[in-house]
Length: 279
Image (cartoon, rainbow, N blue to C red; front, side, top):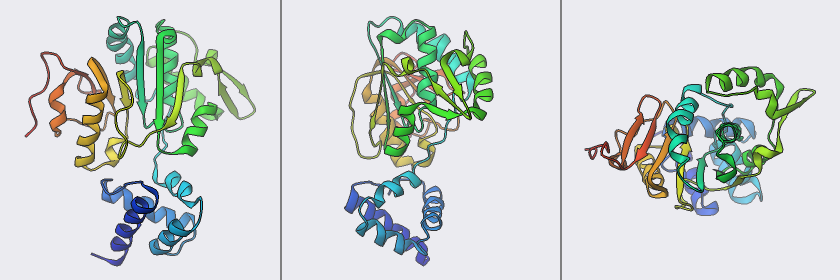
């Protein structure tokens, strides 16, 4: 093991002991790249210097968290996924008098607002509550504002229509200079708050959980723990939507899920099609 790898292990341990953030089960290669980027961003010179500042500089941990998280998203990303939600999931959710949705790892909130728009168009938003969580407070602050660069709106409009949107995406935002601001009515049933998938437990009974392109940064052990957390958070018959690059087949927790659309990573808890226990 080279010196830098040892330094990264010590950095991870310092994060856990000093600040309670456990990155020990993050995918090693991805974690190493992000720590190296943090060293460059903060002119630390070495991972050891980064660790020293983490231990002794008040408030520095927030900047570390911001660098280690991956707040990358877009509105209606993978439009086919949103079409499956609209066509196959929403009709089931419509049978509930109240609908709880957990958007885990919400990043800057684009997918939260995408979901709110489709729920609005399906006539389900008034009885829905979206709990949007992330462990990055800076990302949550951006998500809560709902302000994004205008240059991205053209691609988002195309995604929206391909995802089953029934109007024009521009109906849901106002544009000024180089930014768009999403309509505040889309936030009326959304709660943003800090939740860490690594260390925190079940906090709500959900009918739908979306956690897209977060598990790819976890080891198999942590992915399995997180999938178990999602399974335990869902009502029987509830739905789980993961990123298209993610898979549950390796996990013992997969035994509780059946496929809604395996290619698009949409699953349902329980039912006769539940998967056999992974071995």
